[in-house]
Length: 303
Image (cartoon, rainbow, N blue to C red; front, side):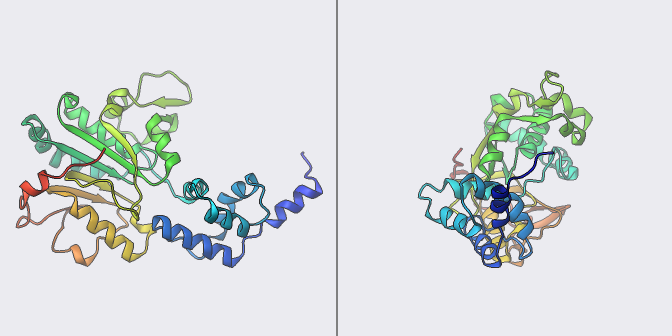
């Protein structure tokens, strides 16, 4: 057993998280990425940020907060955001959405692409990439020649560390448990490592990962024929949720589909703009579909 020296013990005991420090961190996170931590999140903050406080050689959370505010490059702010961001995800999470995508939406998109149309799919709040690669797997399983047409997947997230993980495309062998058997060989390279699995290059080739903060101006303009934005708005206050849903609807293709998390609800301001056609699956009412198509097609996504 390793004994802790008196000075080390004293240093650890100094890292007490005050109520005011909790409030400041909650405020910073809300201002920067729109996430609203619960007032009782003290233990979560302590467990995830103590390492950063000690790494910087600081003696308190208050000095850590001030250090973040004073950092001109914003590097420590990014590290704090990464540490406090929840990244619960898995391949083919909420499988019904992928079944709807494959059976009810994708056939039409394949026809459009073959006819020369530009097709864009967006995995918003993609976390470590499992959702985006699941979309890619379904696409390529049904459209093996997708690389030869103008059809691409954009995947975005606010967590810079998880984006690096996503781009690398390396996952633990346990990740395979949530993948339908028929897709296993479509996603991963033949076994090379007993512990990890690597996403095939053909999936990476049609998927672009980019940083996007919902609170900042979005570097996208659409139109997107399919948008997956699931289990992110639930961490935000109602006014921020409303801005997100409104923003997503604005860049959704006239005939596009929006998938959100099963615990999420779009606001009443969009009830006349989007209608439910499957479990937390939305599209425009028939009367609104195909309106202003020329305007929407003149827009371009920045990837």
